[in-house]
Image 1 (cartoon, one colour):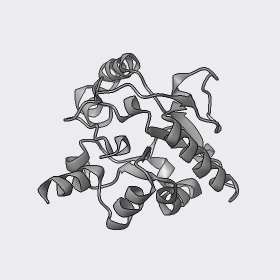
Image 2 (cartoon, one colour; image 1 turned 45 degrees about the horizontal axis):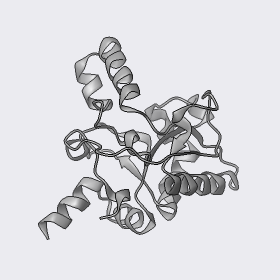
Image 3 (cartoon, rainbow, N blue to C red; image 1 turned 180 degrees about the vertical axis):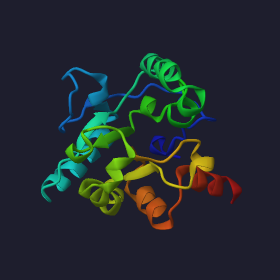
Image 4 (tube, helix red, strand yellow; image 1 turned 90 degrees about the vertical axis):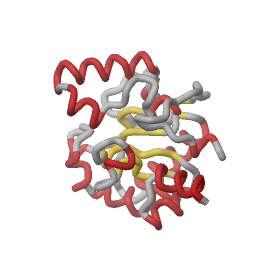
Length: 189
C-alpha cells in the first residue's frame, strides 16, 4: 500500500510526520510562513496542477488549511469544545493525532462566493462543481461525502480534499466509495 493510501480517521491515528513543502497557490488570509500552506511534495504538486487547471476556467479556488501539527490540532479541538460543545466538535473536528491534515495529504479549500469560509455553502459554487468533475484526474477525492458519515466518522465537508493518487482517486470517484470502503474491501478480499 502506498503512503498516499494511509487511512487516518477517528479510529486510525496518523503514525508518521510527512516531508512538507509550500504549496504555490492562492491562500486567503494565511501568513506566508504558515504550515497551513504546506503539503507532502507529491500532493502539493498535484494541488498546484489542479488549482492551475481551475484558474484556466476562470475559477478561483483558495487554499485554507493544509498541514496541521498535532499541537495545532489540539488547539483547534479544544477551542471548538469551548465554542461548539462536544457533539459538534466530535462530528467535525479530529482528535489530535487523528487528523488527515497531519499526513500532509489533505487541503481544505473555499472560494470568494463562500467568503473563504469552510462552510457547506461551498457546495453551491462553480468551484465545487468543477472540483467534483475534475479533482480525481489530479489524484484528489472529496474525503467526507454526504451520507457516509457513519463510514468516515465525520459529517459532510465539501471543502476537504485528500490526495490518494490518480488511479485510486478515479476508482473511488467512479464507484462513489470512501477510502474506508475501498480499504475494507481490500482486506475482505
